[in-house]
Image 1 (tube, one colour):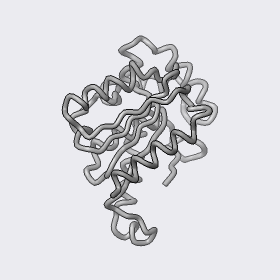
Image 2 (tube, helix red, strand yellow):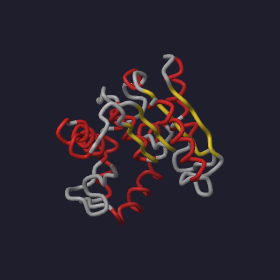
Image 3 (cartoon, rainbow, N blue to C red):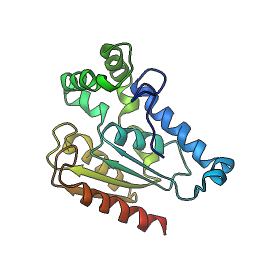
Length: 198
């Protein structure tokens, strides 16, 4: 299931970071509903969440509240909490303004304030102990300057490893968009899902 969040790419409503997790949880619960699963032939025992960038942050945060999820894959995950911890606020605001071309929002300032006021809740490190109960695949882009892995993904991997969680960590020699490495990325994700699925 591919989703467009509220206020993104023509979806109704306004875009806010705090809506992202709620949107994904609603979709996952819809897919897990027996009537829907029967209608669309969904295997409710094998539902995975997969996200890139802000989607990576979203799938990690949503998985904490979805006990039926079989696994979660975060690729070059952005971490709003880390953005504020490492003084990357200007980059975040610029990203909101730039991405605003495809977002419906009252203003970039409102979306930024939403991030500022909810940075702890939005951080991937929030409730990482709950995430440790899931199968997790984290994939970093080594040359990522948008979501630098040493600031945004590796700290979570370290926390999960300390809890002996079932976490896999992969590095790909590419930038944030995995340019030139999409086939490798697809292979890593596909093989991991296949391993967890069986």
